[in-house]
Amino acid sequence: MTVIPGLSAELAAATNRLLATAVTLSDADVAAPSRLPGWTRGHVLTHLARNADSLIRLLTWARTGVVTPQYPSQEARDAEIEAGAARPAAEHVADLEDSTARLAQEIRSTPEQAWPAMVGGLRGPSHPAWYILVRRLREVEIHHVDLGSGYGPADWPEPFVVRELHDCLACWPRERSTIGGIRFEGGPERLALMARDLGDGPLVEGAPADVLAWLTGRSAGEGVKVVPQGPLPAPPPWMTRIAPAGLPAAPPEEYP
Image (cartoon, rainbow, N blue to C red):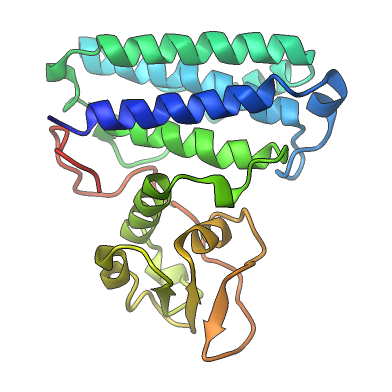
């Protein structure tokens, strides 16, 4: 057994939670600002739909061996989001339902031999195709919070929080770090070991979900404090790479 069935089940559950929120939004809700500066909720929903399409392209690349970029360019990605942002709520829901269903079908039909294929996004590094599921979970869970419609960091499932903290620490920009380390209130020992000696700055402490919300810019640092005391600095840049280096080519039995 590999990580694929478990990640697929997590993604299905996260997608269902996202759709359950989306169907409650009115036209006015969709046109209102999201938690992302300069984006309405319509921008967030359109991005999530188009991201699903883009990951289908990467799975096609993995299955066929024909290089199929995730997006033609950053400008094309941005233009797609802008073009769809102002649609009525019902159109957003239908688009999101359709795109996520097609992505789920593509994941189910991807053969075992395709998962180790190397693919890439607009930013590096390239990564094995199985990591597409991790990337999609990141998009769904983080941007669900960005809708600002009742779903927050406290609602993130623990496996998602642990995995994202692991990958954030694995991609840690030490030369741009604003903290020296993280002390987690709970969480697995492997995270505690990774969170030592992160660079120059103070030690911070908090529950894993609170720390992840702060590191991803989805909170102002509620539940996170400097140890022993002091002002909380701005978090360092989050996920400067789309995937950690050195991922196993074949899907592992568990990740992280």
